[in-house]
Length: 80
Length: 225
Image 1 (cartoon, rainbow over the protein chains, first blue to last red):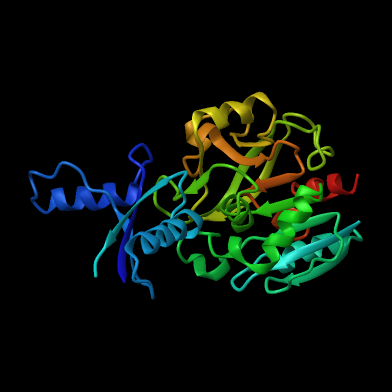
Image 2: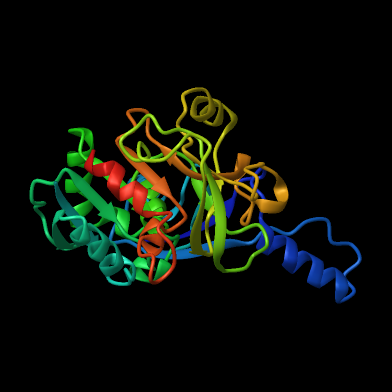
């Protein structure tokens, strides 16, 4: 079973990289840009057929290593 | 005094710390991160550098290494733990210290001498300094922008758990002398019991008057007290 994980900085944590990228896009002429947040993306392939079990395992990976929950949020999606 | 310096792939201040400790007659051991046992140590230093190439987040991978579980065990038994720069990041990632070290607010790696003020000397790490003393130390980091929630910040401030803050020549604390955007100008913090110190500036780089100055030496001398 395959999963994707997106890790982004929490809303109230300043994201300077996202800010710079957003400013650059504005300079390039993107007029309707409201906000942009930069994050990290993981593709995870598990030998697990049970989606609940697999998702729980990925959740644990996020909590223990992939994300620092003081400053980051994560989202898990089943992709295959 | 027995000390151990933990060495990770990518550590680059490990030998500088060892030179200072040995100069002061510490009985020092260098401990590779794959080791599963620590020699009995009064002081454990997690040095600066770029452990595991700063992959994932600075210090995140090192925090899960074999030796760190031993460091955590020793810390809980009351051993003195000093994390400098990347060592501070590792102490945060492994949960021995709370908060987070974000990218510097101006998105640049900063390598320069800065000034810090000693705000608390009634502890094992700063007892050789005067309260309010201004020290010239060196910083070299990309993620040194300390951040924590309001509740923890109040806890730090109310219990004298912030021994070092970035300051100007006169010891004033303001935005101009804050190099990386750290909340309340924080340059270093203690845990509740004050046996664990994490700091971004490098005292080991300021411990030899022929190279730089000796402003950092007092920290190692304090530890011998």
